[in-house]
Amino acid sequence: MLDGAATTESAAEVRILGTIQSTIGAQPGVIAAARGMSHFGEHALGWVAIAGVGAALDKPRRRQWAGVAVGAVGAHAASIVIKRVVRRPRPNDPSVAVNVSTPSKLSFPSSHATSTTAAAVLLGRLTGLPLPAVLVPPMLLSRLVLGVHYPTDVLAGSALGAASAAVVLRAERKFGEK
Image (cartoon, rainbow, N blue to C red):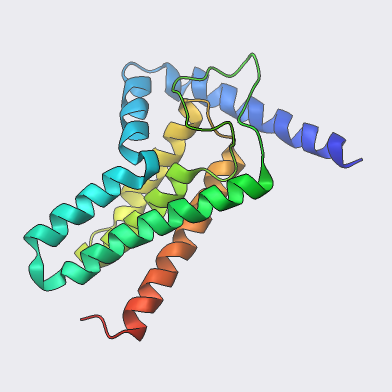
């Protein structure tokens, strides 16, 4: 029965969430930092702000900075569409503490993971820094510490974000970005 399989999968993910919250999430300052990351990543606005500053300060690469904003917002929009199709509810188990409010009750995929991965890939290419390795894992982990996503939500979101960044990079090549 499919419902039984889904329940077993969710139970395993709830156990993972409980472990993350009782270990990493129990460390001083972790929840506060995760909440700060949550607010920064809400609707990809923090990434859009960074792209805006980059475009203002780095005029020769203004179009690439705009690509960072487009990639983050486009990734976020794609995740919202998928959320509305899949309609997976957020974790709701007594063993999982929810440590931040969310704009919806839908969980799959994580929009924060999606937009952060897209932005990190595009910013990494633009700056030459290993930003995906530095920025993505903490954002994914923060969503679990906060108890608002299952592990598969953040993994799928990150994959969607990488795919979104690839679309932006392909468009830049196609249209002769310098």
